[in-house]
Length: 255
Ligand code: NAD
Image (cartoon, rainbow, N blue to C red; front, side, top):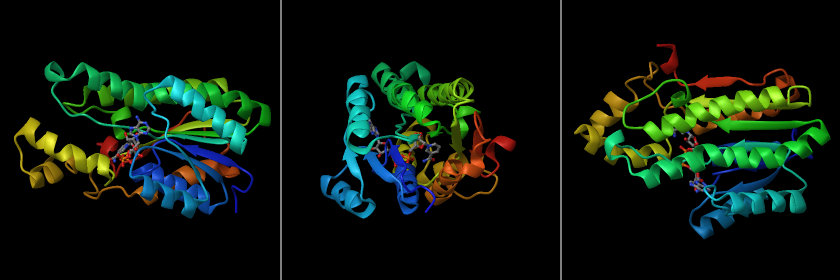
């Protein structure tokens, strides 16, 4: 198992992409701290399956992030692998975009990665090994209407990734982001009703004419595909990949 002895912290790992990444890392022997909201019984089951600890820190709150990072260091001795994945979405034209949703998206999708990263980097540098993987999005490279906060946050995390990669380049630490196109997860499912309203479309029209319209493969990306790439980035063979924004979007950003 390639991650024996490594500690991984995956934010937003009670669902979707984060959960799949947590499973892939645990399957290779990493000791896991998972994070995110959800049904306590389901979270407990996930912890048992993965041999993981759960921390319910709210990624919009810097002091909770600081507490979680300290707990991860004290109880697990890590993280060696940090996956900044927690994210939310809100779909609305900019003139009606609720300011509190803007603030929440910037805090959870962008600023939380700053806080976890600034707290994780010193120990990674000391150990001369570390992996920081940010779940960005095709929206870190291109925009879509009605997603101003999300697109701003994702473009932001792509820039943040590059900057930290340069700062850690000689330390054995790599920093990359993965940019999926549409992945079939609760986050995507939940935005269908708002997009129907914003664009005056049926559910089928949103699926085919909005979500998969720009994805040339006409297939949703799977969470397992994203997890497999995250796992590859943890391998020693991936030591030369840093500062990269790796697209996994069925050709979306090639068009
Ligand atoms: P999801 O809704 O299935 O999972 C989101 C996770 O984040 C959950 O575990 C949730 O509890 C957690 N979370 C939300 N708010 C939080 C907070 N304040 N504090 C702590 N945890 C919080 O979504 P997903 O589709 O798996 O998305 C995961 C990441 O992938 C996000 O950053 C998202 O932007 C990105 N992404 C998703 C897609 C897609 O099509 N699904 C595409 C590109 C990028």
